[in-house]
Image 1 (spheres, helix red, strand yellow):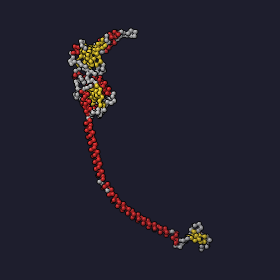
Image 2 (cartoon, one colour):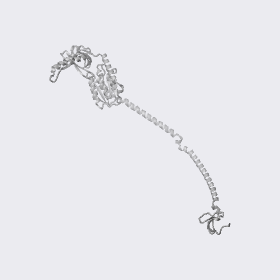
Image 3 (cartoon, rainbow, N blue to C red):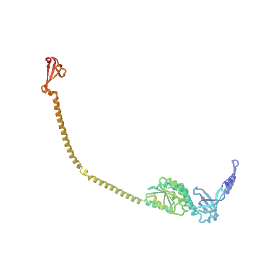
Image 4 (cartoon, rainbow, N blue to C red):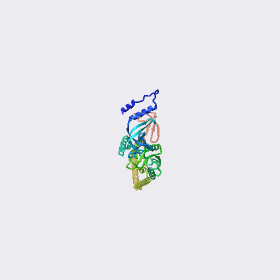
Length: 416
């Protein structure tokens, strides 16, 4: 390859604004470069086949299913007619072709010398390699799959118009939940345009905020018929969706790559209808059963509480509240009597003690002495005269008697 690039570079044209090359020279150079490429083996998908009456050449379009690059292909009618099975649109092929450039029209095409259909075994091997590659990138990881809403308000349906899959999904879903609404997005379900149209339909539903879940539905078919649903670009487009997607492609044994990247796989379109909406009869029965269980639980709770209340009411303290007070009342009365007796005895003892103390105090009181005929003499300052020498003749003294007082005068000095 490097030597070929060197040879091509060697024949590069030397041009300038002052010395431009004419169109014929450019076309001839391009033709020379393409002719030096030689025959190549190329793989792709037949997107279009045109057979014009009276011509010995068949015109086809070979498409890259990932990059969506198309190249015109021509081949001899004899070669095309000799293919078994015959080439149809959407078929995967490997062809040995010679690149050709037509200077008069300025067009490029491949002239097929040999065409090989991709056999089923080889096709399955290619799909397995593609599955492993995408799985390694995490497109099929279980943790990224989203849960379906319990009761979607609107379901987006991608299918072929007036197809059996459409009738299965609509009839079964509306039979299960009559109020469900559908947003239809029709697309081809097989052929070279299937993957592109399905991606366009998914994009349209993804941009609709009212769509809660998307269903891609198609009936059964051969492996070749289901090839568009293993298209790498379609698988990557589904991986980028924010809306949960249900894949209902083919029947139970069929499993295109779309089933692996989808959030939920349904074995058939009828199964998809069962997965996206609940059964109104079953849900009604569940509600009725739940109401019965709730009613039974409430009644059981009330019965338990009533039994507990009756048990509490049957206790003696609640049946006759005075039962506990009556014995206590007798105890209180006895305590009151004891308290009164104790208090009375204490008061009597205190009275006796007070009488005795009073008698002692009275006996020691000067007034009691005066009662016995004694008198208390006090000088003019009120001091008690205790000795004769404390007064002099002529002093006026006050004599305090048991009853009243007398003023006395000292007549003379006391005898020595």
